[in-house]
Image (cartoon, rainbow, N blue to C red; front, side, top):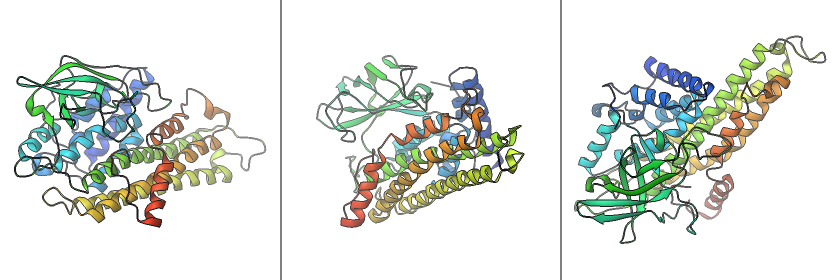
Length: 412
């Protein structure tokens, strides 16, 4: 387990937060330019306790609301999209612990979060016949004397190779699913360092995780976020929506952060252009009304994306404010999921357009490999492909026309 110096989580709208995000972005850029992994940037996340921003202030965290969290996330994605994406599973883990009615378990794991430790995931499996989102696993968690043993293989383990802990979803002998939390350096745990072959988000560590006879202590198995007084697992109707709306809006917010980067890169590229075409509308590129209009369109699209994210985040704040005994108001929770889905439908269309328009202001120099401007399109398109937009749009239409509730799984 990594050892981290004592520090407090940064507060929202502070100079410390701005400085931390800027330092993480610089570090990630330097690593990439040197052809190295971005572990040092993730160490800065630990150092500045960005993983604890949603933990209440009295418990050592930053006390961010959902609106503040997603505003921070977009800024982090602007600084480096890989770093922001890496932390998705971690922040989901934190949200689950914040809603847990098991006070002892909640305190135990949030203490680690406040200490700077990062949690990754191992959920998805490929090759089987079960549809995505059915939570049917071939990975097994088998009881043994004094605990459990974990065996299986997972894919798309985004962020886990950078983490301190990994939460692994597996099947139990009784046919239910359970979540095992194990340190990434425990015997039998391994992650392929570079077998993610996607065209974008190249350094998110979204590769294969293998678990071979991994020992799991009894208190490293988490069954649910909500328990009855007798300790039995309880699921409220709003629970799946609380999961899905957060983890899906997270991805869309990273895309919105990428769009912010597109704006700054477009502006910087036009400003540094030393010459233009003889048939251009102005002698200086920055004075060209055609280029000015394109940049205005790109900036407006980025603004619209950020506004959609914050509106959906406000809806999540409203739903979470109603939680009592582990249950949230169903109508408000469903509405938050609806807004997250609507934000994705629009932003998935805006982002590739903005990333393509970037090349309309650059001329031939914009396509140089050294400029790496194509990364924005590749990264945004990769993230958007996590969940097909068409399924979201259809579900929204079915709800509005027929009152059919949105899907209740975290992949929606």
